[in-house]
Image (tube, rainbow, N blue to C red):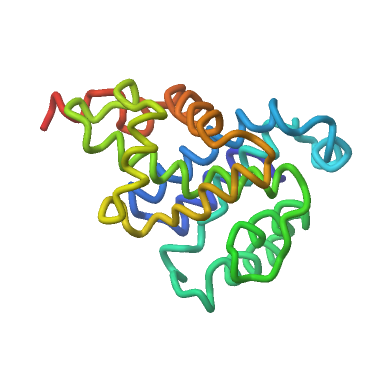
Length: 205
């Protein structure tokens, strides 16, 4: 049975890091939002064949895209090991292919709106989180497109995040970068509490 619960169980089995789990939730939220904007009827047969809504299919892909990273962080292993695990457990190719396509070095092209959206949301979600964490209230309510763009220019800030991927991801989707940043901020605000980015962290610090 492929559903959101089984995806969460898979993630938590392989990922103990709270920050990596929160990253998965952030990308899931962005992907769920993207499904309503970019799906455009594509992949409907694939999602219905799995007994899933389009939103759930996209969300699951976002949730598990890095599930193997904590155990297999090297370029040789991630996401290849994850793909092997998913295949062994009978996960469908539409999900496995999307997961493989989010890494530039796998050679798996991004052909569908879902695959392009995962790439466009992955690094950006991580960067938005980093920006929120340096705000006085550690809250997504304090983050806007301008503050994200400003930090993107600072190469010393969140240096592990690939700015080029963020720019190219939006371009591949055919959307303005500022528009996409604002869209993903809004999607993540919907689960700010789960991400620990609702301002509560600063109150307890």
